[in-house]
Image (cartoon, rainbow, N blue to C red):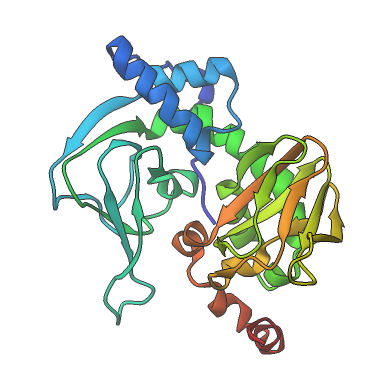
Length: 286
């Protein structure tokens, strides 16, 4: 593991926030996109203002490569308009595999800045795109510290999840960075029985129940109760299967969530991690 060095020649106290001139429309668009991106969910209001001031608009034409796996990274990007495809090589002997298509509001490129590591995947513009770019220096001084606090908060949650027990601490820290917060009001559905599932949830605050139709034609019955520290939907990280039950908030509910494609982008297929303990792998496949 490596990180940005701070000392005599790279002191945080020397940071001077960058200000790139923008129109009111651009500022509003960046603010809306920041609200959608998990990386900025734990920033204070003043920190958000610094990030908005530092972001610049960049345009990419259809077919152009925005970032290339293995290259050094000096920016992260938030998509304002257009779609981009993500490809990743899991070994030098295979072709890059398509992982997902990024949509407006999503961000990418943060891994190289968080871990001072090469680009983890290749991103190609599927059509003409407008992105907002944030430089490494602003990221390190504003976003990275907030991400570290968030990581520390959620790593202990992740260590309790049986499906993820064979992950090492570094892998868990990367997953903690990708968790996104969501809030639900009392009686709102988090997931519904029968719908496709690709997202895993931790309960931060509040309570929820799982309900399921046990007899055709009758109302769903309560089959489980969730409180702070519990989790559900973990098998969605392994494969896309229909939800087995409804999850309904019984109080105001705060959860954090991780989707399967973000998991694959961060550290690869979950099957490979489970195979470290083959008995566990067989259990979850069954």
